[in-house]
Image 1 (spheres, rainbow, N blue to C red):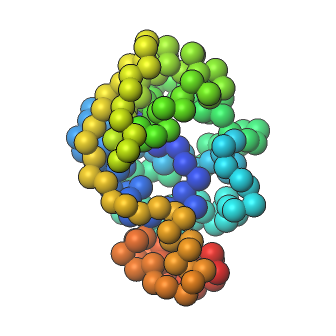
Image 2 (cartoon, helix red, strand yellow):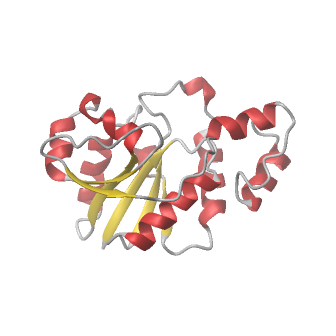
Length: 189
């Protein structure tokens, strides 16, 4: 099976993440998209993150009725911080029957040369790049890329967290089940 791996902190998962994942699953050869929840992204401050199991629960709530999108906790079993190359090595050992591609925004793609074992990633994996405003896709030599024009919403997890902190609504920014859980648990206040 062809699987697109969409890595992220998902702090919290929001409608923009889900639109991109659904678009990739429906408009590329990917048969599924796995949201790979990172307990600790090496490029992000850990003190700003909701507990990884709470984020995992919210992500699973968001996609529970969608057979094309799965949530993976694979990085919970790996050393922290999470590095994409280590995750892919583990996934190949665990699921040799699958073919994995990496889904990312054009902003993240520009930073790819800074990643651990970037040359190995660029040599061995296809990248499915969705365009982000202000970040043109500049192909990195030797990298197999597919560029998609996924619908973009100007929503960020930062906006969701800020709205919660300020007592504003997050309705429509996140799936309804996620909103209900965030509000009931008092997350991001």
